[in-house]
Length: 116
Image (cartoon, rainbow, N blue to C red; front, side):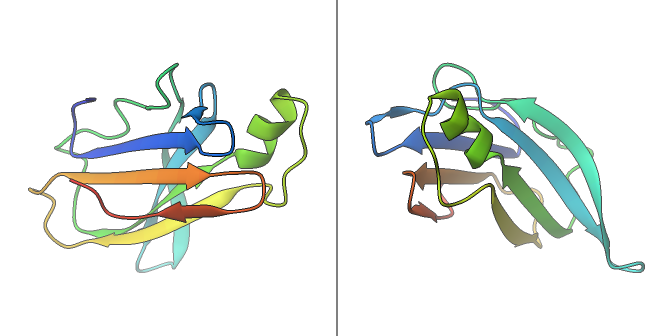
């Protein structure tokens, strides 16, 4: 599994395969200005994982979101999707813990949870 305090794993449950080559971005909310700042961008590997999203040092308490470019992913497979993107917003109060946020998706549904 990828190292770092925050990991994700995207699975194409419609086809039963990892969602490879999906663009992902990580953002943090500026609680004073109430605007999102992009921290990093990445692309899922052949296993549907995106290692190195954020370093332990940069992972501080606050509100974050992972944006998954699901529409572009499905389009690359020659398929249409109901969701052009998926944003998962979450709060980190103890950055010393590990956080794993999988995304399970098909063209017409998705779910996520906090894994370990």
